[in-house]
Length: 306
Picture 1 (cartoon, rainbow, N blue to C red):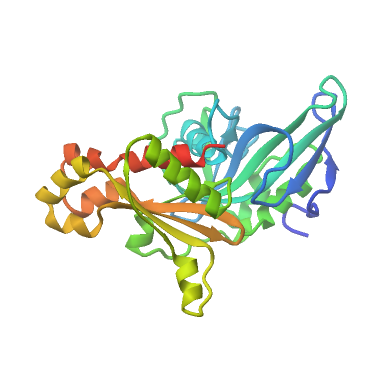
Picture 2 (tube, rainbow, N blue to C red):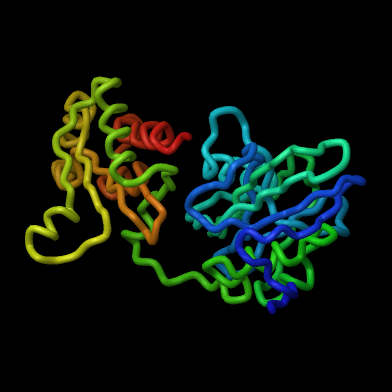
């Protein structure tokens, strides 16, 4: 049991009637999404003060931010856009907790199957300027979330499972991060490490970006008689873009060419790299030269797309 009540088992269908239809919800653990139509993302959004962000359309019923995907978005891209639009908050780190699969067993939408990704996201709150359908935002202590969070009829076991999914929402304190960790961008790939690396090198080739090295660090570890989770470092760049940066800031050569590490984190493939903004700040680059580093954001967005 949790503060939300009984916890749904993995794959257990929970009756959750909606608008006269007979819907059944089931929790599925990461990393693979269950079969069904992608239906967006929701998140327990945690601030620097360890409060949880809630939103409301009427000021009475408070829910977690999230919404439906736009064409071509990955699960994480939907998450980041929806949190920005609905909660005026920027996602700084995110962990996929699992998926909720909704199946309409009877009613007007009988046979429809929808899948939504569920996250735990660290966020930075921006000034409250609601521009969409959500006029209200508040934060509540994580320990009191169950008291304030409105849940759909019958869905509490799913919320309880989400709350327990790898990070109990009543214990959502952030680990202390070093500055280096705070400067790293991490995205989730829907593919295994090897396939993600192969896709990345293909994208680089198609765009005419020079590939300097692919280092399978887990294979190197095995050669030394050691064990390391699947970890591959990809080094790439465009000398025409990187050279002016190093002319202006010679020590930028320590960070160039650009590097992306593709690694396995307990079954989830992650793609990590130093934020271009962080690199620009580290080497005191102006806006023009900082733009020379920004391509990695676009490349990795393409990389993690379904």
